[in-house]
Length: 359
Ligand code: 57M
Image (tube, rainbow, N blue to C red; front, side):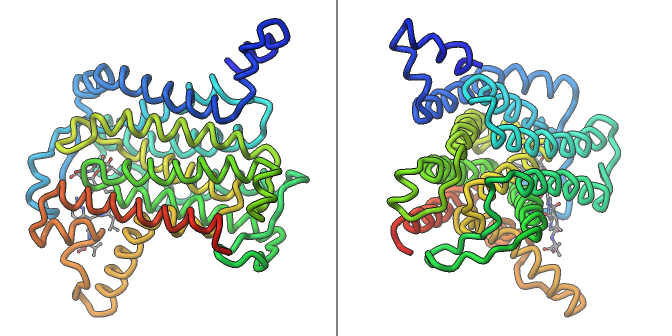
């Protein structure tokens, strides 16, 4: 809205020209989301505590988690609230990609909200059924994939990192591919969200990376120079990613060890889904395996653990899955697991960035 209100005045006030620039708006979207999250946080945490939206902690998990019982959850309400407010303020709202990002984020926010609401407010022990939750996720993701597919200018070729000439065209199969990326990442972030700051830290790293990719793929000259797929209009996604970075840091302020609040499904599901959508829009879909590598490792640890457990009738690869519990049970203090996992996510993001040059 700031863009729509102030930029047109640049003809009389030349300083307002600055609102045209994606870089400027990304920085301010980031700062705005950070400030909203940071300022609203204490009030929101108080409200969640008053409403007794406190985390139930499973007794079969690491014993160190028992003391976390009662920590307010559903912090995703104010994370996503800050992102959406900031994006509405700083983006060009005539850009379709902004609305697809917002649609997916709010759709998954709604699914997470229903799940948390049933568990935390209605005190139903399980929330939505696994099947119900999954179907709703697929539905929202499918609509996002379909909306992209129907855009005349949207390319259905998939970019393979490190190989500039390999980009298979998936045609209408791209709709399903996009849906898999979005749903897969939503669940991967959800699985990762089991230690203080463990999900939001790597999410900030991943959104920072896509902030750069969105900017370069939306700029015809830079995209040509780097031989990337040019996606007209995708630069605005950079503003969305910037807002996620800001809100993520604002939330981390309260979620860092020892956490004052957890994000809940209302945070983890939309954050992962938005990350998947950003990867799809910027045509860096496969690269997400590296950019969000930590989430992939966490999800794979669960897949292998459950598969092995079933095949061997009760044997395990890890002491407990997801893999962060394995290290906790080995005796690593929680902050050590968290910071080491952050380090891995930063290293993976740097390798991903190197694909801008190595191809
Ligand atoms: C959610 N949620 C946390 C919090 C957060 C298939 C199976 C592997 C699924 C998996 C699972 O349910 N994962 C999804 C993980 C929970 O956090 C809440 O959930 C929200 C995210 N959805 O925002 O509201 C607990 O995580 C801790 N936490 C923090 N700090 C944070 O900032 O410490 C969360 C955020 C919180 C808190 O303790 O209560 C969770 O772990 O429940 N299931 C599991 O992860 C379980 N693993 C398991 O059963 N593994 C088995 C295999 C065979 C499936 C095995 O390896 O033997 C573990 N989780 C728990 N106890 N809590 C094990 C048992």
